[in-house]
Length: 436
Ligand code: LLP
Image (cartoon, rainbow, N blue to C red; front, side, top):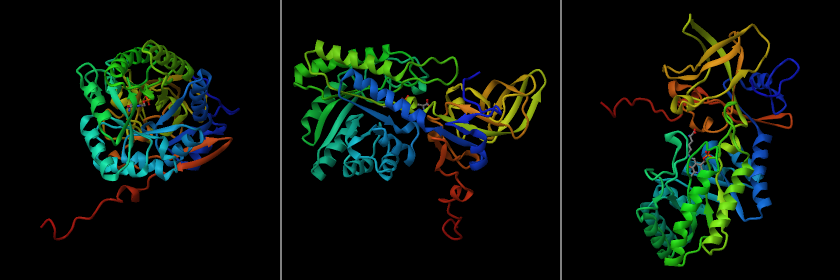
């Protein structure tokens, strides 16, 4: 049982608006964000840095949830922005986000994306591999500009999380390997290219992390190498970026740390290591995605059909599923949910929540206790604000749900529901002559 706010009729409140009102306005499925929660998280990350008295940037990892309004909100809160594609960069441009605070990630940035980002004048490229570095060096030469870069390295720390979202280990597709000398070669090359300004290093050890130890270990490893590069190349980092991955509460079993606890641990570790290696303390950058938006998002569905297999399972189906939240099917991710339109009801039952997609694996939950449900009840699935909308698909040609922002007892649509016309927008009819 959660501690979510309810009105006197027992209906779920999202940012002081009745969830049922939202579904009446916008239909279901619906992604609803309590904007004040996003602001609170952003402010606690920043405040912890302010209190530590260090130079910093908190970059919102927009892959977690990107749309124009969200990028504008990140700007309002003084965040920087991490983008991983031309599409996310374009969204940032459309949102009027200051380009000098955009950091460009990705393990296979195309020449076109790099070119566009240079024209846009973004603040930093997080260079992942030699191929990218060569393209970037060439493009900066051709355009006679300079690119500020971080080198992404893999510190070999295994964060205890799902293998698909663990990224910092040695066997990872991301970044330059430290142990094998790859990273040394990368530093040498980066310092060599006149168009590249090497700011420092980046690492990201994984996602949904609940302890500070992994970050502290990763920083210790980074500094072994930074110390070496200082000695050999005289290189002193201006920036150390320790990535994102700060865990959130999906269910009552999750006990995430406060943003400040991560920041304190990271700042302390970077300070200690800098002192030990006789280097000035660099600017510290972090990249939270999930921690900023995850808990602020709730998905509202309407319950439809049911199927009870006596003694086996009682399925109830909702009007969305894996198309708006792939995480249960992809990672066995677990969520918490409740009825939004009422709390009272008959004795509790245990339900399996099925999506409407044509796939047996389209299940959102297997054992959800709820009062006896009827068609038309509204189900609220909590903590869907990160990697829900951003990983949504049109499988079965289901239109993607809309996104509504709620704040100060007002609600505003920020992404419209897709229409059937949207679904066929890029389709072209079979031509009468070309294939025959
Ligand atoms: N920085 C880098 C370099 C990353 O690769 C990521 C996530 C982040 C920051 C933000 O991580 P966060 O703070 O959101 O955990 N689709 C998966 C998560 C994939 C994360 C990939 N990289 C999921 O739904 O759990």
